[in-house]
Image (cartoon, rainbow, N blue to C red):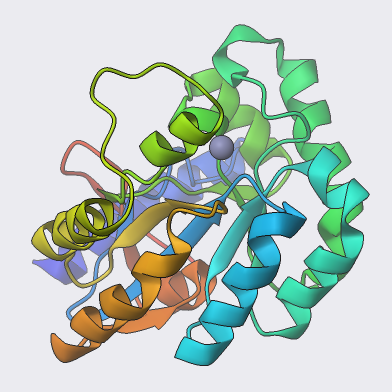
Amino acid sequence: MIDSRRWIVGVVCTGLFVIGTSCRAAPVWSVVTNQKKIAFTFDDGPKPEYSIPLLATLDSLRVRATFFVVGKEAAANIDLIKEMHDRGHEVANHTYTHTRLPNVSVDQIRAEISSTNQVIGRFIDGNARRLFRPPGGQFNTKVIQAAESLGMTVVLWDVNAGDYVVESDRLGVKDENRRANGAPFAKGVTQQILANVKPGSIILMHNGGAIIDVLPQLVTQLRAKGYDMVTVSDLIRSSNAVHTGAGKTEYVPD
Ligand SMILES: [Zn+2]
């Protein structure tokens, strides 16, 4: 069953390669695996006031994560990108200006991605998969094709920590449904993740202050359930197929 599905997808990919298009025509939502491996992802950094304590907390927990960084913030805080890389985390692309991509031209999408790659490229291993996450998770065919034309693997998530709601509060954004700060928030985020996590999950969190205090108890509880936290690239490498949304899976060629 699995072999035949792989064979069929392989044929599709080969056909697309012949006409010069990547076979990765869909974003990665999570990874197909029986191993209890998951990936923490932190979007929107680097921000010194949050990134420095976040990196210290991840160090103390011995967790490696993937940071989807905003190019203009990375350019202004390149030492933090180096810190992320030197501490064993994965640095990935989250556009240059955090603009909503479905609203802009293909050329602008490519420029958002390329200019960020120019800033963070030297912190990405030459053989590593280059990962890209569109702001807000908003994408259409144009976004996917632009990213793939630049050799990027588009990564979304299957578990949302919901921590951005508290970050919105910090910025003064009105939100009727915002969560409480402090202990209720920590409990809510932890329960939200524990209720939805599965082998191969990619978890959306943010490079903000709210998540930092949650991490110790979250990591403890995930490890008690047998989960190991790895980078997105390591997660993808640990399997040969990914979930691409709407119940579909796709073979990963390397
Ligand atoms: Zn973002």
